[in-house]
Each structure stands twice: as C-alpha cells, then as structure tokens.
Length: 162
Image (cartoon, rainbow, N blue to C red; front, side):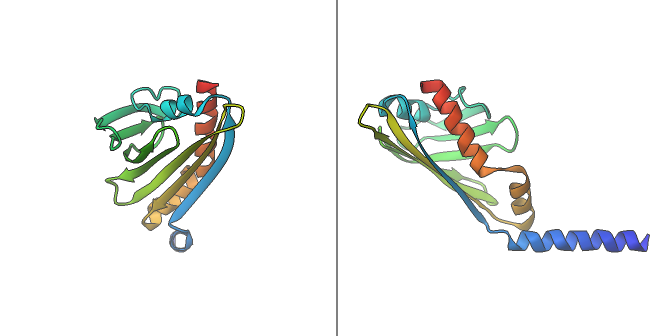
C-alpha cells in the first residue's frame, strides 16, 4: 500500500512539474489559396448565423449582433463552450476575434483575405491560445491540437465555398 501511495504521489509530482514547464501560449498559422473570391470567403467566415458548415461546431448562440462588435458563444461538439467578440471586421480583407469572459482560457484568431491574380483568395489564418493554470494547461495539451483545429477549419471552409 505504501508503495502504491509513493507511486501515486510521484506521478502527481511529475504531472505538476510538466504543467509548470509547459508554455501558457500556443499558436498555429496556415496560409493557402481558396478557389472563390475574397468577398464570398469573407462573407462565409463572418456570417455567424450560418456556421453549420463547420464540422466541429454544434451550435452558435449570438449574444450581440451589433455590426463590427458581435459577441457570440460557440458550443463545439466536443469540449467547453467559448465566448468570442469581434475585434476587427474589415470586409473583405481582415477579420479578428478574441476569446472573452474566461479567466483560465483566452486567445485570439486572425484571418486575412487577399485576392490573387486569377480572382481566388489567398487566406492566412492564425490562432493563438493562452491557458492559465497547471491543470488547464495539461488538459489543453492532451485534448486540444491547435494545428489540427486550424486545418479542419480550412478544410471545412474549402468544402463550403469552392
């Protein structure tokens, strides 16, 4: 019994040490071309009332629909709900949002949209996540792959607009 207790305490101590050493901020950035014009891509990304094309989202609740400062809650199919606010909405070039009202989890997302010479859209999406606290950091690293999240978003967007 004593050996089991020592093993458990050692395991918890290692998890604690790993949690302390993990960085609080993580980010992912992707750039690609979408076969649709910037106006269509931008309108799709920023239309909060129609986000059913996103495979990881269960529901979106719009809290404030005031143009250029929208507030909404995303309820993913897996994981906790997240409240966002629009920071910049410059059609059809730039869309920035931030996570709000969560003391342990924050961050922001930036999307830029540029027309290519043949009328398609070069997008660049970057997502930055900030997690405070040892246990939340550990859980974030174990259960949330930020690169996969951005890749899935882009794949869903391509399916919707191309």
